[in-house]
Amino acid sequence: MPLSFIVAWIPGSRIRVLPRLARPPARITSLLAGVASITWVVTGASLAHADGLAGATLAQKGNGGTPACMTCHGAQGEGQAAAGFPRLAGQSQAYLLKQLQAFAGGERKNPVMAPIARSLSAAQMRDAADYYAGLPGWKQAGAPHTPSAQYAQGLKIATEGDWTKEMPACFACHGIAGEGVPPHFPALAGQPMAYTQTQLNAWRAAQRTNDPLGLMQAVAEKMSDAEIAAVSRYLENPSRPGKEK
Amino acid sequence: MSFRTWYESQKQTRKFHPGWIVMAVSGVLVVAGIITIPATLVAETAPPPAAAAPPAGTSDHGKVPGTDMPKVIEQTPDPARLRNAKTIQVDFSPPPDETMPTGEFGQAVRLGKAIFTDTQTYARQYVDNKLNCVNCHLGAGRKADSAPLWAAYGMFPAYRDKNKHVNTYEERLAGCFRFSMNGKAPAPDSKEMVALVSYSYWLAKGAPLGVELKGRGYPQLPKPQQKPDAARGKQVFEANCALCHGADGQGTEMSGRTVFPPLWGKNSFNGGAGMSKVKNAAAFVHANMPLGKGNSLSEQEAWDVAQYLDSKPRPPDPRKGKSF
Image (cartoon, rainbow over all chains, first blue to last red; front, side, top):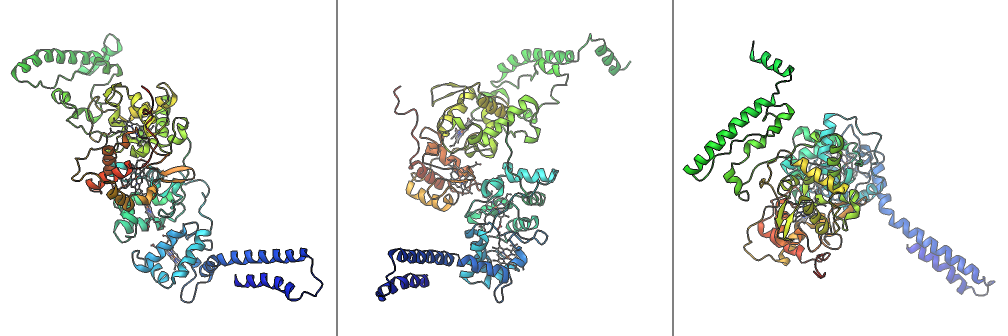
């Protein structure tokens, strides 16, 4: 930004300092002023984007001791289903930042992510969160799973819950089809089955304890292994509700 | 000749119908009842269960009465307790969705559920706020202690103080349209009303009629120790509710659909709604909020936060300001 101010100042000043040069017509003055202000805007905008750029560098190249995020979270932040590494792309900035802080602070335990989070400065955490929040979120991929008993069970838990044991539907908090309700309720749609399963197990065992009001733990502690498996599978590729006639 | 072959032969000749057996048995029971009931009434004040003679109509289906009856019938209280229906509570659980009927009636049931859970889409023209029926009747109208439909259906017609006459079930639904949804009621014979009644009726399948079922309404709280206080309620709200309903109480919409419903303001229920009474709101909140953590607030906290909700502006009671 300071640079662009100088650019804006020079043309104007030259005109005043060298009055005997063939006086540029007013048109040229205004042209120069126009170019200057465009420079000013563009520079300002790219400075505002600097966080995202720094985040992209961190994601693609890492930083000193910190490995590149993309080696685990995918080139587009889409995660790695086989390894159970979560999708980060499209998750809200506030949520991603909160999780990085939780790994670093120990409220969320994970032997892989904790040291990585601890190696990041506060600014780098923000940069990475900005970058991944800006990438496109999950889109329904092809047809949902072929219907099966497990699929039906997962669908039911996600859309209706089980009130006979005081368990609300996942989508009551996580939004229609698990699209997320920023900033507190993350998107679940498109997360690898193994990842969702790990998180639900961690809450049930009180190993993850960073949820506000204990809301997520209250849900997980009511779930059986079979229910956790069914809903985690369903959430890999959930469908949007159809219409009743 | 065995009994079975005799029975079959009688059936073939069509001179005999299995219903006769039922008629005979129930006839005997009725006679026995006529003889024994007055006798016991003299002996003691409470009569024994009136001989549960099934109406002869059950035999139309050619089934032995009792085999197809839902379990809850066994828990039907005896007449003496029935007379005090307000004070007894019977357990009941509604049938699972997988057993929804097919055909035209099944379609009405399904539409009823759709209207109930997504009123904004399926009964848009009758609603003038951002709520859906399910917002106050959780679990698609199934959850106990959140005024479930299966517990309501068998309790109407009933006299209501609110409008000082006997209300049909349709009229009860109309009340929630007018006040809770700040809208206008569909006509009793409209597609929407028929669907909502069909859904309720189906959920109540097998429940005894006219009996207070366990889980009906919102469980009323005893009077609080301290007078409900909106200032304390505000703190309860900020700590336990704002996360979902927003600091401004306006809830959250995603993709044009209400996820967390507004608690006050022009998009919420109006001043005539049941929820606008502090005692109803306290009862609902205590049993059902925060979502998934019902019964976690203290009773005092529930009263205080209800008082806070009551201190906020909302659409006026449509009955007020009109000349009667």
